[in-house]
Length: 129
Image (cartoon, rainbow, N blue to C red):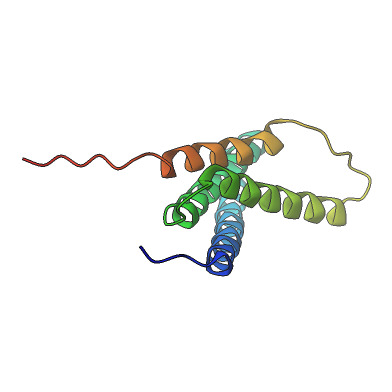
């Protein structure tokens, strides 16, 4: 079996985290357009934005951690920490007076990463006849 390099895994994780960030930004932009058209309310849009970010991070963590041989959950949690940290930095840069609290906006990325890490670490089910 060929030994994998950790640098390649780190690059894949960083690229997938960046892709999840960009994907969530695009989905939130589309969601803001829907809110401005008054199709959905602002409060519903805030909740859907958090869910869209969690889904993007879930897909990114799953794609990044699937080929990694060990410690998939830790890789996924590291990606969630980078994703949430970047979100907190952007949020405080936009509005420095806002406080940081633990609510569903901070918990959802970590829940999505845990789910992706556990799903990626499942043993494959081979059914042969």
